[in-house]
Image (cartoon, rainbow, N blue to C red; front, side, top):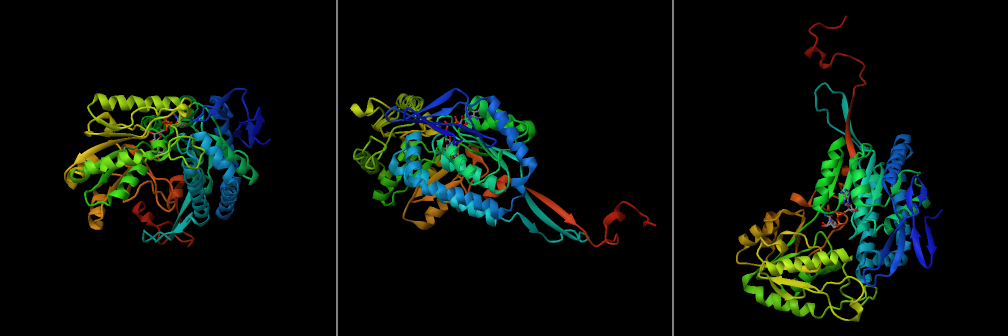
Length: 509
Ligand code: NAD
């Protein structure tokens, strides 16, 4: 079975468990964020499916075919799947844009295209990763030793709706590349790329049970994976609040965990910055994907001398943006993901106004017939923000930026670091030495100098403080999905050099 049936022009997607396409009779609807039209339906999973998927993954791990497959062969399968995704770019990028409400102009090169780059890198890495390394004789009597990095076992992955493909790739590729088995639970309204990934893994000959995709509510199916005694590792991307629940649940059997959580990126513009670039770059930082990125630059720290001109230029630039049909290549800004998301964002706009911030532009739903359906929020700039306001402390996850004025570089660093989060940060200046000095002081997993949203496959992605635990991607990506085992061996056959004299005072007869 293919796992995809089409009824009344709307495709239906099944779950993939133990090498089989599974339906339940009930389904989720995936609707366009722009038009509310039905895009697809997806099988609705439950606790039973979580348990079945984990049991299948456990059985596949114990049976051992996949973990004993050579790294080169595992890498080849990951590369074959990457090639198939690349061949299907046009079809899949469109489906993905519809699924997550992204503009096609951004989805094709970024959400989809950049994910391909990460897939390719991680697939190759799996083939050249050092699974075994010899070490020095650390003890004078130890004949030899080696470190073997072994798969952990059943790895669960839980991902959100905003950029699900790359977030999944960061977990699935290193996990499979290292020989683990995987159960992934995407957001129930954004699982299509994961189901397509399963289709290509099946075609590439991955043994049954090695990769499983289940859908379902986070509080039920996600929570089950987090506490399941047979899951040994959990890779989670989502909100900090749920990340803390995952940590608590994972304590039950001391699961390994990687957490990629929320952010409130401070974007510092110093008064010597190239203003034209910094204005466009700062818009890119908070508006890309309608601000629905964990690494977005949502606190805009402007030095006093340039503050007024910068805000004025930014508001003028925003007025030139084309807001509308996300599937039109000329559109700059599309909708937000869901009705709930829109209401949440507008709630923060009200909170900002109530706390005394000034609305420099936006703050509502754009007007016009094309905005009567779907979920829209205008690009919104708040000025006169202080760092203690909710709009400066909490993640809004929408096209809203909070502008904070500062006088000195030291003050900017202090404001930037005064946050529970520490995912991303940035500084705009033409003074290279100063830029690196500031970058060193910022408490963040990623710092961009005169840039934003840069996440190449060769570098680690992740945050400090309450933005997460561990890193994804980069050259050490498989470390998070392997357990180092130290093996010492002495093939000399004699007891002369043994340290047993520490215990026995008399030599053996
Ligand atoms: P969310 O935390 O509500 O949900 C994320 C995933 O967790 C979903 O699949 C959901 O079904 C599941 N889930 C929900 N409750 C659960 C529970 N009790 N137990 C187990 N699983 C549960 O997040 P969201 O609203 O879908 O996504 C937005 C959040 O994700 C933002 O906070 C954003 O910053 C964060 N995010 C972080 C990164 C990163 O790399 N740091 C990347 C993208 C998004």
